Length: 297
Image 1 (tube, rainbow, N blue to C red):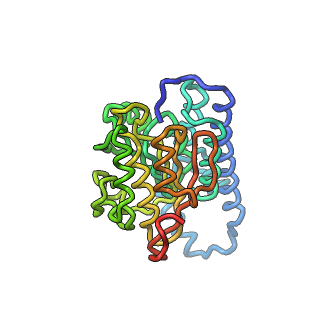
Image 2: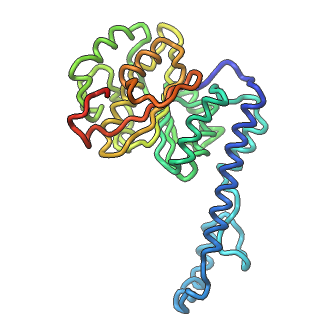
Image 3: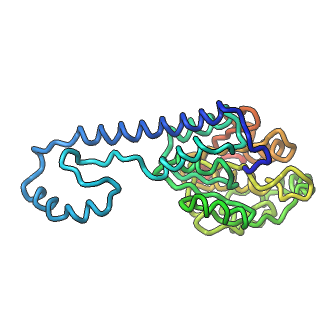
């Protein structure tokens, strides 16, 4: 998710700002609609008295100043305001292209607020967190120093350090390992004996049912890099292991051999919805709802 390329076409920056502004407009319209639906005549005298007695407490818990003319807060959420300022003034923009970002943004538009897990912490992290405003967005990163740098700039982002114990040069061997029964049996990755399963993540990462998972890390562009073999496999297993429903899984950089082969093998061609540029989108259903479902359709 980080890139040595710091400058990108201005239309990508405009897209990001457009997404954030559209989200802001939707937020304001929803707030205004909620306000218009309130019927003052339906409020009982006892409830009105309770509201008056608690007015000081309510005022202290909101970012909006007290007002007699409005009953709801239409102020821009601080996270959205910060994202707008950041992306309108920064020359560093996300690594993904306009079309690639649009694929995930459309799913977020339908599902947010939701649970969104991202392998990687980068220049696009504030954007993803903001587009999932009100939901929970968690980032997993291999580089501790990079986590600290991002925390200083954006302390509101939730990120965790993850250690990967495989290398890109082991990919072929791991592909063979992944064909074994121990790797195609659906279950909690923490309890798996499959060599591809990631077991060192925080417990809550395994326990939350993620609505979206983005695999855009770890580093995978040279032979001694960790590679994304385990990240792709584990994303697919967490999706299959949810109690019900389905998970949208995205894999970036599928122009590379590992991302290409491992996403097709462990997220499955049959579950792929679309490929846009270097991004693939898979929709994986729960396998616990149907225990007889094959690993790939």
